[in-house]
Amino acid sequence: MISVHFAAFLFMEAPGAWGTFFTIIGLAALTWAGALFMWAAVPYRQENSSRLILISLFITNTLYVSLIEVGTVPDWTMNISAALLGALPLAIGVATIKTVNNPLRWTVIGLYSSLSVFLLLFQHRPGNGSDLALNGVLFTVYFGCTTHFWFAYRRATAGAFVTIAGFLAWAFVFVVAPSIQTFLPEIHVENGVWNLPKYLVAVGMILLLLEDQIEHNKHLALHDHLTGLPNRRLYQDRLASSLERARRYEAQAALLVVDLDRFKQVNDTLGHHVGDLVLQRVAALFSSRVRRSDTVARTGGDEFSIILEEPTSRADAMSVGRSLMQLLEEPLELGEHTVRIGASVGIAIYPEDAHEIETLCIAADLRMYEAKHDAYGDGGPEIARAARALARLQPRSGAGLQVME
Image 1 (cartoon, rainbow, N blue to C red):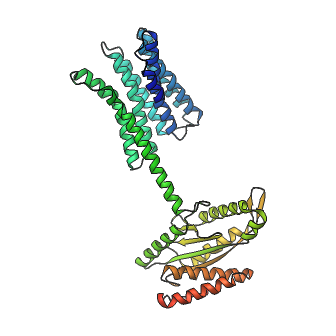
Image 2 (image 1 turned 45 degrees about the horizontal axis):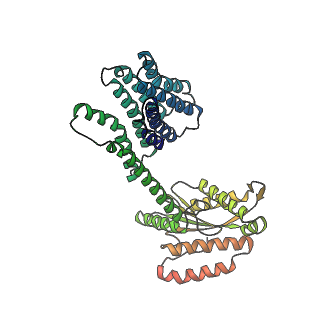
Image 3 (image 1 turned 90 degrees about the vertical axis):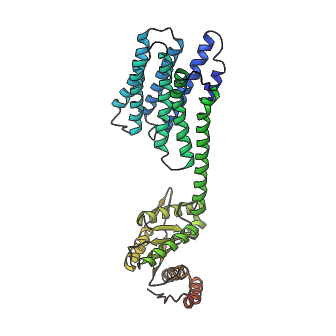
């Protein structure tokens, strides 16, 4: 719409009716751009009432700027057009208040109701009434964009600040420019200066895209792409932080290592796409079982690790472990497939079982392999390797590990 605005204004000096036509198109496109932006910023834009308000703003803004540019129209048509700018959104908002009652909806209604009052008071003023009215319409549109953008992007980043400043400057162009022409006519300002806020908004939005991309890349670097859970890197960082807090407050922290049983058979018989669905379902089940302060991470192909923050105890950790196993005892419905898997859980408690991250992880792994071996006869080599690693680390850490439950 801004491109249409610029293109139309290239021909606004055309003689006769063509010049008026292109001026109307350029001004209408400027109002359409703002109305579309406001509509795109609201979370309920797919509601029929939201579309109706957008259409009403298209029609009333276009009608009003057309009447202003034509000029030779009766006063009563201008009064009706000015009243419709506020009355139509208000009528739609009141009629649909039971389905949508959002602050942004009433922001638009309040802005356009205030605009209607302003136009009815000043549009017939001798000399500059038409200019005041047109600038009032454009100010309302872009001040509305400012409030909508602020509501949608309430975050302290350079992109948000620059874009809000750009929209605010864009709105006040329609106040400052006519004020300079009226009160300081000796000051000449090039027309291009008044277009700078448009480019400031564009720069701000580019910064927002870059900021979003950076955050997305950070998320990818620290989270598992399949399940969205923290990956091993973030898990290690959170485990270190958890143990440090427990050490500082002389509290306990629990680590649970969960290995899925019969997962390889699912991949081999039903395919890796079903295996991926299993992992996603398990991640959702585990995340729903623990507290928001706890961490569920995917630390291996079919291995999950859970960090239970204070307040916790061995009994609490064992209760969580049993509930996780019970969740996976039930068959998982995955579209046309029904899958039965189980889980083996190993639990290690800080500081009872270990004082260091590595020894705590090995203790939890060892207990998980023991549980798997007891249940299925699997995990013998892994138990031996974990026990040897634990034996090597134990003298150095002085953990005094209690390996068996």
